[in-house]
Length: 216
Image 1 (cartoon, rainbow, N blue to C red):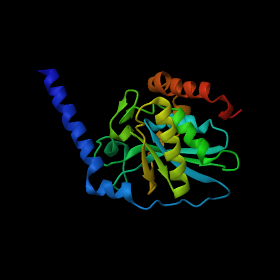
Image 2 (image 1 turned 30 degrees about the vertical axis):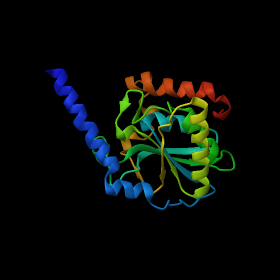
Image 3 (image 1 turned 90 degrees about the horizontal axis):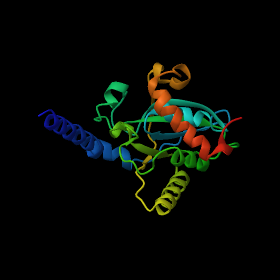
Image 4 (image 1 turned 180 degrees about the vertical axis):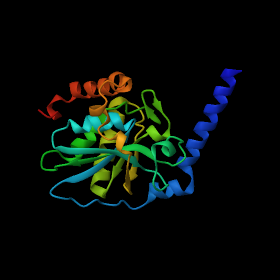
């Protein structure tokens, strides 16, 4: 009986998430014109969603040329998303990061390589044990040049793996900064079980694959 109830609950949950991703407001987000974020003090911004933002923030903060990484929410159709509301799967948002970087040191194309190289690119709606539309992979473009870079790298990876790449490609619209306690979470909570068992191992796997990209 418990198994039946659990199965029904999961069906309802994923049904809600699927509706959130296919309702008219969400489709409008996916087909909107991209918004380009202007450079400031010689720094550019890029946006990625790839599972838990604690993990993604930590990975990008170790990349040469990256000045700062902020955790937040993007890709959805609701305003002012929160951790609680995004976890319902009904907002369309995914946990995402804003990467502030020096394009003279690291290119957008390299940041895309970091993105695909630091996740399981074939997992749909999540990374590892973090499952649901709020953990899905989305890579955001701000102009046609970035879109071309993303689509070419995604296509090449699909051919290399002979598999479908799960990452969605969205025009960037808006990034909502997450609650204060999510920022620099790994640095502030190094002994947290999730950090020890999920976030740090994920970073170490990335570091082993791309040692040349890691800050000294």
